[in-house]
Each structure stands twice: as structure tokens, then as C-alpha cells.
Length: 622
Ligand code: GDP
Ligand code: MG
Image 1 (cartoon, rainbow, N blue to C red):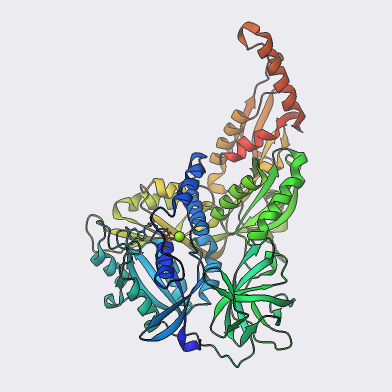
Image 2 (image 1 turned 180 degrees about the vertical axis):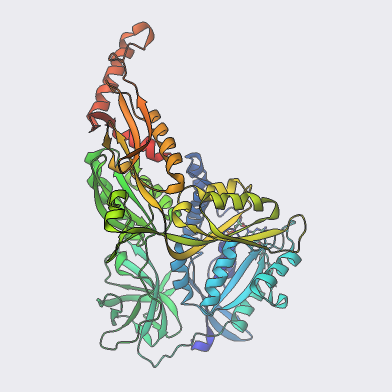
């Protein structure tokens, strides 16, 4: 296939607008996969029910896991090559998958670097949502040709005119260009294929130039190691080629190469303009750098622009419930990172929690998903410390990055050493029906948002929606912001954000003391405006969770030497069985037995006996 018969595109959409469904239809219509009967997804749905019954935290996570599972289990909603004939000419179409969530924005932009066009899919009943906007902007910045597609026109609630008007005003799209479809029924799919061929330009590639390939995705196969997806920008990539990574300068042998059709199908060669997989002797996913440029040994090329390694934006410590299980936990973490290259790992030790790992994630959703997978893999509960964003401590002569509260300087250091703290800021976009605007502005203000601005999307009527933008500290949205946003807008608000640099901020480290001894694992970074509230709520919470001791235990929250809140845990009566009525012998014995069990896992902090489980209770409910 010469370049002019190749089209590389992706589907971009807000979650649930039908990306996977459209991908499946395209694969079916082009004969890449068999048409599946109704109920083909039964297995997926059954699996989800189990998930639901176990009650994973938060709607968003649940939803994301559903997506992840649906994508894994359904016939490839992923990167795939299709063949399609139009007006007697045969074309090779490469659908390139892009991750659906903001946490993975970096990968989205890399995947788009392998495309010349994108189908912008919008649900005709939901209208343009926050993610539709953000993915549109990324695609636009990358210079992709955009084909607007209106999906779900079969729904009774579909309002095509209104949604097309939104697309026109927000994306400056000519309404005549919009293709109306139902991905579910298959209506309009042929028009989509025709538009892909007619409107998206062929890849600007040259077969005669030296090999230059963009690595834009990778998966891990237990038997063959890392499988990378590449877009050949120039030249020809063949089996047995010796290639070099521009990023690491490491050399590899191409062991296998082919197309995704939709499963791997060896072809032995990929020509300029094509997209496919390669297996080379990469042992670890961490060697497959998304955005890396590959070239042949001895034929250097300029690396494709814009590559910088992924950045972790949310950090948390992970500890076993039982200290002796640390190695097993670390083992499980390592196994998982074979398939999730974006997690960073460091060992960490805590006086309170013992040996553990400090992990870095792309965002909180990423953290939640990883945590869930880790608990499955490790087959036990784990303790995860409060998420922290990467702060910067700016001294006169240097700036250091701090992502662990333990490393945060004491307030007394500030004055002496003349430093200040900076925190990461994001630019947030919220789209919401007009009637929730006040509620949303309040929510943003409560979370230290600035530059709050809004304007209307639709002509004003009762169901009109507004788009609200603001700058907000990343730390403010890493805990329960999304859940609050959803509940306070009755589920109608959609939300997205992008990095917007760093800003000086009045932040301090708050420590919690048990019997005057600080508990390192509980330290948190708090903004001045939230000091008192945080101190009071945490101290009250600790009092509820920490078991009584044989003596009185003061529980305090402090910044530096200043105590901001205090509760006192009164001493308990020595005889634990005294409270049991009747003194039934068996029950008495059992109780003593339990107490002994518990003792084994006790930690001593400031003479206070603390079961590791208490930390699970404390941190688990944040
Ligand atoms: P994604 O999150 O963008 O991948 O969305 P999915 O493809 O998973 O679709 C989300 C939901 O919308 C699923 O329940 C689909 O069955 C449904 N859906 C997708 N396309 C259509 C359509 O054209 N009409 C109707 N009625 N439902 C659709
Ligand atoms: Mg999907």
C-alpha cells in the first residue's frame, strides 16, 4: 500500500459517547471482525456485577474500570488495521486507540502524533462535554483533520439540531460536515468510512528516507516481553533489523513485526505510513518510552519533536497490612508495573508502617485503578497513605521537588533559610446545566480556585448549559473533588483539566502526635486556609479509630511546634472481659485469644500500642 492509500485516524470522544461501539462497527463493516450477536458482551457485564457488589469507591472509578474491562474483553476497541474498498480502490485504514481519561493526556497526545485525522464523536442526547472539548483541542494542536460525527441519533432524547449548533459554536465546525450515525444500529457507518478516505490526508511519509518510527503504545506479553506499537514515519521497518532508541540509545533486534488485524498478524515488514506492532528484545515495559523515536543502527535521524518523559503527578506510600509481607507486596507491585509502565516506584520506610513503596501516578484515577488491581494481585488489603502532589521548595540558590510530606521542611526553616513553597496548578473546565452554576462556583471557591469564568454554550433556555473555567491547585482535586462535583450537579457536570504550571502558596506540613510522638505516615501538606478544619477533623477521626490504652493518650495535630487541635483518648479498664455480660467461658476465652492475636501485630508509637489495621481504618476512609 503506497502512502496515498493509507489513512491513520483515531476516535476522540467524551466517555460513554460511543467510541468503543463505533470502533467495533468499523471493524465489522470492514470484515476485520465477525459480526457479534446480541449478548456477546454478557461475560463482561457479569464480571462487572461482581465488581459492583464488592463496592469499589466512587462512581468515576467504577465507570473507568468498566471501560477498561470492556475494552479488554470486547473484540479490540484498540489499535487495529482495516482494509476497505471505495470506488474500486482498496485502502488500508489504521484506527489508533487513544486512552479515554484526562490522567492519560500525555499518551493521548502521543497517539495522535501517529494520526493525520480524528473522528470527533459527540452523543446527540448529551451534547458536547468537557472531555469532548479537551480532546478536540489536543487534536487541533496536533494539526489533525477533524471529522465531526454525531452519534446515537436513534435515541428518543437525541437533539441533533441543538448539538450540531453546539459543535458549530464551540469547534467552529461547518454543520454540513457533520455525519449523523447510530453506532449501535450501524446507521451511517459507510459515510464515516468514506469521509475517512476522502477527508483525511494520507501520511506525509517517504519510503526512501532512512527508517524513522514513532513508538506510541506498548503492551506486555508474558512470553515475548514488550510488544510496542509503532507508526513508521519514514523508511521501511523489517524483521531482523537492528534498531536504536533515540531516548535511551539502547539497541534492539526486531524479532517480529506485523499489523494489528485486529490481533497481531506477522507481515515481516512495515512501510512508511503504516502502523503496526514490533517485538524486539525489550525486557521491561519501562524501556518502551511512549513518544520515543526509533531508527536503524548507523542511520541516525532527528528525534520527533515534543518528547519528554511522563511525569507522575500524584504520589502515595503503599504498605502491607502485615510487615512481614513487604516482599510479597513489592513483588506484586513489580508484576503490575510490567503492564503499567507509567507508575514510578521507590522504596520507602516509615517508623509507623515499616517497609513500603512510594508510588507515583499520572493522576488519582490512575492511583485508584492501580490500588484496585494491586489488591487483587496481592490478594490482601494494603495501606495507602494520603495522596500528595509534587511540590517545589524554592530556596535562594536551588529548587527541590518534594512529593513526600516527610521531606517537607519545617515551618521554622522557612524564615531562616528564606525559602517558599510552590504547588502545581491546573486549568479546569466544567460543563454544567445553567441551574447548577452557582453550586459549581461555590465548589470551586471552596477548593481555592481562582480566575473563575463562565459563558453559555447554548442559546439560553431552561436546559441551557454553561462552561466554567478556573485555575485550581492540583492538590485540591486529588481527593474527593470529582465525587463532590458529580453529586452537587446531580451527575450532570463533566470535568477535565490540564496542567498550568506552578504557583507560590502558603502550605505547611501538619503532623499528628500520639502521646507526643509524631506518626510519620500520617503527615499531610495543608493550605493555611484549611489548617484548623483539617486539624480538628483528623484528630476526631483518630480518636475514633485508635484503640484505648492502659493510660490516657493525647492525640494532637501540630504545625511545627504549634498544636492546633487536641483530643484525649481515655484509658481503658484492664480486664477486657469485664464488659461482657454473663461471663460465658467460651466467649471470654475467644476474646482473650483475639487480643493476643492483635498484640502480635502491634506497633509501638510513643508507648502507644497501635495495630497496623488502625492505619488502614484511618487512611482507608479518606
Ligand atoms: P465509550 O465510552 O465512548 O467507549 O462508549 P461505548 O462505546 O462504551 O458506549 C457507551 C454506551 O452507549 C453503551 O451502552 C453503548 O451501547 C451505547 N451506545 C453507543 N452508541 C450508541 C448509539 O448509536 N445508540 C444508542 N442508543 N446507544 C449507543
Ligand atoms: Mg470505550
